[in-house]
Image (cartoon, rainbow, N blue to C red; front, side, top):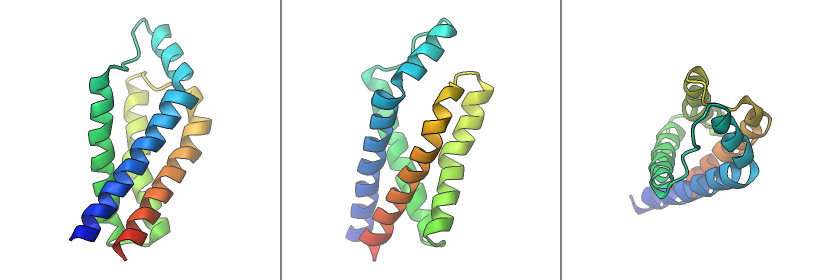
Length: 125
């Protein structure tokens, strides 16, 4: 049980760091410019960061559960589909997704899923 909790916490930390670096350093300008073009302010208050922390934990739990039934590649692809692709479809439909981020976001989110999966697999074995 302790191994599982540690695995989930380590994956949550990795996911949080990955999301923060990608969206605050690499892609922040794209997000801010896109929101400005819609006449709204990009949400970057501390409460938004806290909700992303909750999302990271939920995503780590999701990956953990999937990893119990599937191999690494299947876990990565299923978690990416459930965590990112579906989110991008929804926020794209709402017109709040800056499509300019996708050439960076797609490979980096796949890497995020891969490393979270490997953390969980290694920590639980």
